[in-house]
Length: 124
Image 1: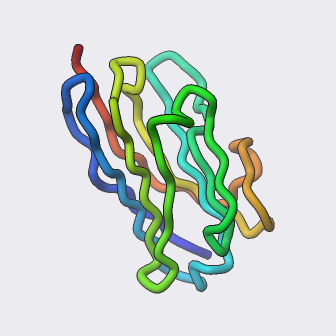
Image 2 (image 1 turned 90 degrees about the vertical axis):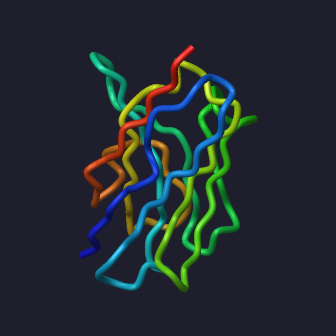
């Protein structure tokens, strides 16, 4: 098993940047493909970004592809989500997730472990 804990959320203004961190513990972190998802009030949880076990392959939702960047540090069991040029529509609870499946996965059911989430609020 792996345990995940997100941090770095907060209240920012439109146009600002923010970096979310997901710290993992448990089984070797390098065995897991990682993803970031978000859920706004009244909406379903949606895929934001994902990164493969070795960090070489990444995927993004179209809405964030030119503004967000996912990265990972396997030695320190951490995955990051750098968010630039934030917009009010980016407001949501952001959660990281882990799966032992190889590659990058965009569907939430593909992931086995989830963090509790961190709130990101972008004011206009």
